[in-house]
Image (cartoon, rainbow, N blue to C red):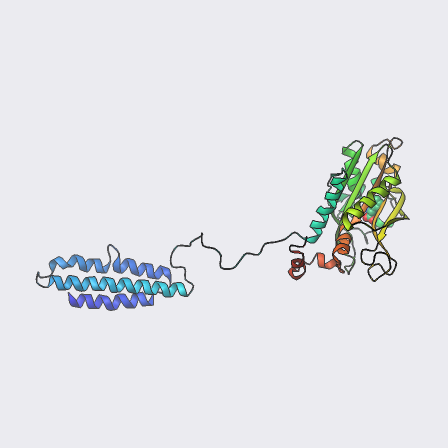
Length: 340
Ligand code: PHE
């Protein structure tokens, strides 16, 4: 009996020691200490040992069992230390490293901030497709067939009749097809132009369009709306001005400037020494656009404006390269954590 015990000790300990994974160790445990294992078999054999040797043999077997159990525990600790998951995974344990929280992208934060200001002025929010029909992007907006903006050099055409919208203005027509005046809407969204990227150009960017239609809307309403927006977004004290411009879908058309956010109008690098920053295109809705939308062009007047959200965000946060807004470099984005 003693010989059998010694042999099993030698074999058992070396098997435990050489178990390289949790599974191998568990298999060894079953073979040695399991219900049908070798130690159990020896214990069962005790009854055949002569009565006077039995107590000593029993005690020796019990020592062997304890020795093997200790060896299992030690090997289990070693394997776990080496990165082996020996026991079941405890899902309730806290993670080893903190999981960093994400933060809203500055562009989307500014977009929502602008929308909130217009909600405060009584505007609703609308939406339109980025893959747009040539009809809505150009024809219904009174662009002549040979207008240069339709050129493949400016517009990403997907087919003869479909394109990636170059502006949010097509949503004007889509909204007017659905809604009878009076109405006031903003529609923010992504637009696309076939441009080479540089510090101030990107082939995709965001615009927010505004549209307000009723019976006696005038340029003065536009002016007051622009001023209310500038005051609420940039703070009090910035003057605005309208410069005559041309858009096919508004008449008259203007470009809107505000006093430079950096120098307040004295002239600096941000405003090219002029003291003014262009912030949007705008104008009174052209009667042909009303006609395309099915409105009685004699009954209604309205204004529309279109603003580049990227530009507004860059002015607000002093970002000097539009590409930073699209590269998703965490060193850039982390600067807005907790700021916005
Ligand atoms: N859609 C014009 C642009 O992209 C901006 C604009 C919108 C101008 C509405 C007038 C009225 O430049």
